[in-house]
Length: 519
Image (cartoon, rainbow, N blue to C red; front, side):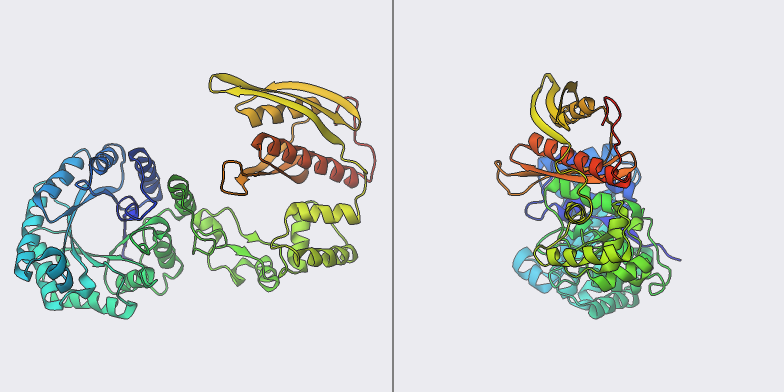
């Protein structure tokens, strides 16, 4: 078995994409998570690009241990010197220097002859070796470079000390078969290639970055340069999560090649990047998209519920994904509906299930997704009219909060007509008012899930609060919507409590479950 090294360039090439800039502190936070993920190399930035980039590289070099810390540098002494200075605190460091080798880049961008480029590459590697023994050299736009010249540049770079040779598909021009052939040709035509690791860095302009990278690995490359969520210039880079999981799931095809990535940290790393940059992956994104382990089709749902391998080639837990999600909609069947109702605590006979299924299908035709609250409403309407009115009603609440003030809430509510009042403090205004409600009712339900999201993009948007609670072994979900997030949270919490109480009453065969002074 051979190792494939994972070179993460999220903080350099990834950050160069419009909308993905990060502060030094954000890059440090991301770098710590990348170390936890287990990447071999973190390209922390381009030290010569700006003062901020220099400081980011220096900060990561000081504080992040484990991976090799790397800085990009053009084949210029001033760039390489700044990279060496920024990387000085790192225990393990690499300078990554590059120059273009394609005719179009040399003629129009560099305005240099091939011989001048060859000499510049040689001097750059030699100079970088003054700062570290670990030097990576990249032939920018390698896939559009003349082969014989490319071989000469690579051979020269290795001869003067390059330990890694990177072959970038800079503009995403290659297709898998020809990129694999390029790697084979380099291995067969560069006499000293055995003294360096072959790396690849593929862009996704034609949507082939991952495929190109994997084919390169299949044919001898042993380092892949990639980013979390595939972010990067233009259409992005090869996605780290896709490269790693392809090698893991299809090790039969790749001959047992492996990485040191802790795959259970993949989802967490993806979500951290989303939070930092404010840019989220599309739902159908492989490995980390919201729909990656979600099923709505009745046929798929039946198969997955019978055995996950019928429609899932990897366990969601293997990438740190919360779990398989069964989405209830118009394509869903009886098996999925029964499973979800059981999870919600409803045990129905086949006859009752058939009645609910018909109503479920009618509702699913009217909306994209049927939520737990919708199912509960169907059940209540059909079977569970235990109480005509909701037992808990909030009459009034007041919250005091501020940056130097302990959040305090007072709530006045009625429980089955009996007025109750309570005051409580909390870690925030929402925490305080929810604790006050619990105090008034003398209950402490377990909060299983709590999320708040804006329904529109403006500051006056309505907030939707969704909560899932457990009260006396009975689970229930609630929803509240308001422009005030505190009010939305109160409504959602009370909604969940009411549902739990009414469901518990039904479970106990409509017998009174109220003790003196408690719910």
